[in-house]
Image (cartoon, rainbow, N blue to C red; front, side, top):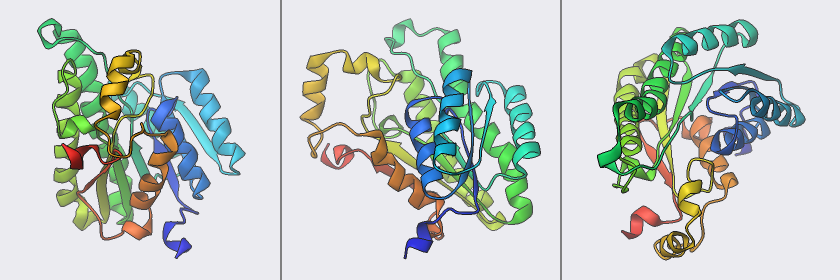
Length: 254
């Protein structure tokens, strides 16, 4: 049974792995046996993630990439392929958010969020999928959000990007299944990260939100590792086009 979840011999790429969810997933995939490449914009934090992967006894690569730039994505993927040889698993995690009332959202903010969260995910997947298609094997895991399903005030560009990411997951899963590529998503519930800190700074918001989560607690980053490993492993070999929400029961209860 354990062999179904074993990622030994696989090379994974986790984007946005400088901190938070991306760093946790990179460490989790390494603990499951994968060698892991990481990208992100914060060089020093990216180096720390690389060191954590190497501490698991796995090989690691770190390349700075701006996920909002297609040229930067293509250059970064090309460099990683030169260094690592191939990418078997992709976790599209790079993302950004800025809380702002919708009437105050300008074009610059919209483009910054949507280009990073949605456009960047697509063009990263496209760059990696070329090699996967040649090998007739590969897994892409997109990090969606509760906002892929429900509306959150002051998070319109973010919600639009994450809803689009879910649509992209479903479309690519059907198009690339004949190429041997599985495409799924995980949808984190409420996890405290740098992206969500603006919400957690309000004690009233925390109390109100906890009342809506059946398990009665916010997520711990390690809660995402098992679902991610499952969807990246052979245990999920007949699963594609799905989004697994890791939310303590939030969506089931509304």
